[in-house]
Image (cartoon, rainbow, N blue to C red; front, side, top):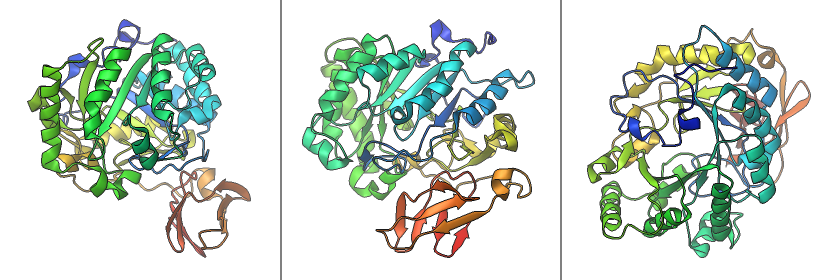
Length: 419
């Protein structure tokens, strides 16, 4: 299955140079074609980070995506002769996708036949030798690894479920990924609790020889939204940090190779001479396990459902083209919470039409709930007698939030559903 020259990977991998030639992406209110599809493989993680931009909780493999169903939707998009926009990369994320490696392989392995670059976003703690060998065997082209903290005591305080040796384990795993021939991108998020470590981390990554280092301010989304005041730098200090970091780099460039250094989600860094991409999410669509497709994982603009029976990703692409100028301005997604660090987000548009209640079978099924409102008890959400989800978040004394249950139902109040 061949791609067109426009979709063919550059140098075997379209992100190998991290699109440096495309920076800066200004004027994003002008339509940008789809560049990548991002798929959330599950709602669960082996860690619980106070700075997480999702709300995935530790130790739970919740709602893994149905790979056959997702593949049917994605491959239909790739093979549709009437669709001119095709992604040249697919990112897999979570939660922690290495917790569901069978699902990852089922989605990623076939994409090599389409000439599509594949990336996995991971915290790096589960990147064992056996898992790494399996990723290479499925022809994964790269890893995006988060590394924010070098101090073990600080890590233990900020990351639930972490182990004292994690700071060293992840560094070893990054080295192993590079040795295995994978393209390695390391993301460092900066905030009030770790700004003193960023130069040290960057120098470590230069020494290892990673391909790209990305620095971005912490974004008040997901769990991090609840910790925003303690985590994030004041707005004026964010700019000061980048000025200081640029000065440190000029004065003491550090060891090893000059890893590609970029700044994301903070356009003012361009004034400090950083390579800056205003909005890294403007050229993607974000697919959740329960079928929803969003403009990006930080904002809530809903583009429709990737479920094949709802029209799949082909209908999502038509919706994206129709609504693009309403969702974007010259710096990207208008409602993105990252903009609180330098601007002001606007309200969410959420322009997709309401689902047709008479259409797909998964929305006409009978929903029931059981359990109590006491936090020590489990509630269950069932569809036609089959367990769909258990609660992952106690919102208040009697209200629970469910994730990705296959329909537009987010919360349960004892005795009734809210849709």
